[in-house]
Image 1 (cartoon, one colour):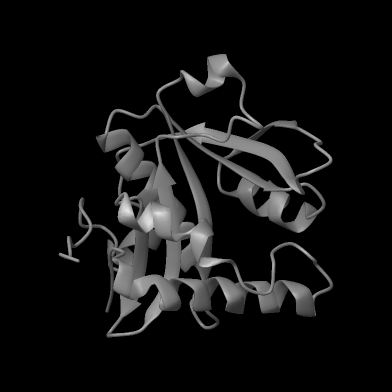
Image 2 (tube, one colour):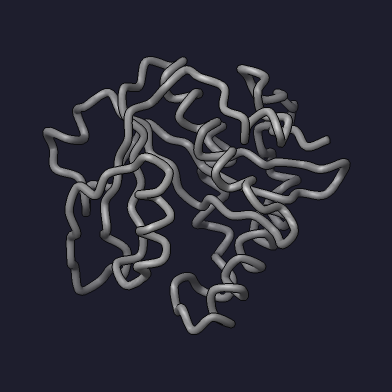
Length: 184
């Protein structure tokens, strides 16, 4: 049975491995979305701040996400950044866990709502229409696309944060309202 827990610095390599596996799948489909391997500096601050989560199936990490109250000022306006919103990033799964990404998005939305968030937001790669369709099919709406020369992401999506348990969450053991807290 899978379960979600707060990532610790000990999880850094496994977290990066899951992102690398997802990146390899994208690159194999001709989608140059993520680097082959993220630098530790792109994840470690979120782990240390308690914003990063891992999903385990037994011992191995099979999915990752970061859930933060801090939005990217490159994309979201000052007024939007003042909204009661949470931002999801670095969401990825390993092969063989169909539906886990959707369950993890639902879990993030529930966590956001339970912490006073009204919206769950994310930014996606601008040139990945399949990913845009994936988010739209999961209840997100496209807010706008921001094109910056120094960023490849910028397709902005949001949906209401809801304190509900979905079938996908139940299927993957993510219905418990809180992640397992692990001491570093």
